[in-house]
Each structure stands twice: as structure tokens, then as C-alpha cells.
Length: 112
Length: 108
Image (cartoon, rainbow over all chains, first blue to last red; front, side):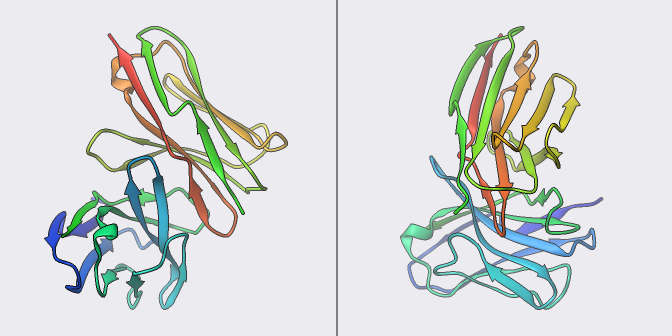
């Protein structure tokens, strides 16, 4: 089944404790992206990747890192999480950067 | 800087009625996307509109694009309860920008 998977789905952590949210797609998509969704603000793009080893900042990249060492994986790293990073995070992928995106199930993060 | 505005942000309507959601964007965008999100779920692609005058239809939903007016519409015909969801439009320059979403509640 073609899909985008994210892990974990739910995470509670404390300020400053590094964490990684994994994202994997099995559709051989070139483009991958991370978003955060907050009430009243819609979806905002954090980082995106056009292909392996090619990443770029989205609208709200501060406090996040990403890497794209393999085509299928695009992990999101929070080196020192803070409470303002409490949010719902979505990973998405598409064949090309202009194509419609397929979204993962979401990761709900709470930073205390 | 590209900005995307949807209106209305909340819409409650009766089954059987027609309504339109509007999506305005501030600068040139080479395509316009519509997504649906059910409560507690992920986003699902509905339409991609590629050019001026493009119209796409799926069931009771029809999306159109006017690039000169920088406006896309999502029209709902004879609404049914199953269409209750939040609908997002998104436009793109070098980044993809989403609108804040329209929460649609259809009353039986």
C-alpha cells in the first residue's frame, strides 16, 4: 500500500530533550516536506527536500533540522525542544515539487 | 511574499444547499491545490488546478481557478453530511503556502 508513515504518532517530552520524528514514504517520491499545524494558523511549512541531500527552509524553520540521506526517509529533528514547538506535525511527499502531496498521519507533540 | 486567504473560515449549512468557499492569493502562483481534512485525521488531496480557467469536479465538489483575479473557488452542490470537514487551499511560489482552512459543518 502506497503510504507516508510517521513515528511516533504521539510524543510528550520536556524542554531541551532532543527528539527525532521519522518520516518514510514507499512511493519513490522525490519531494518531501514537513509542516506544523496549529489552531487558527493552518499549516505552515517547516522544511522541504527536492531530492536526496537537497533540503531547504520553509516558512518556519527555526528550532528544527532535517536530513535527506535516502530518498524514502526525511526525519525531523528538534535539537532542544521548547513549549512553543508543541504542535501537530505532518510529513508529506510528492513525485515532483509541483505535484499534489500525500500526507502522513501526523505526530502530536507536547513539550512541557 | 505569497499570502493565501480563505473565506469563510467557518461555515454551517443545511443539507441540500449549495455554497462556495473562496481562496484568494496575493502573487502569481503556478498552481492551486485543494485539500480536505476530517477531524483528527490527515490531509487528503482533492484537486490540483494548473491554469487559468481550469475547472475540476469530483462528486458534489467543483473547483475552479481564475489566475487573473488570483482567485480559486470550491463549490459544494447539494451538500450532504459526509462533506463536513475542513477544506484547505494552497498556492505556491518557491514555497507552498496554505490558507487557514474553512471548517464546514453540514447540518442534517
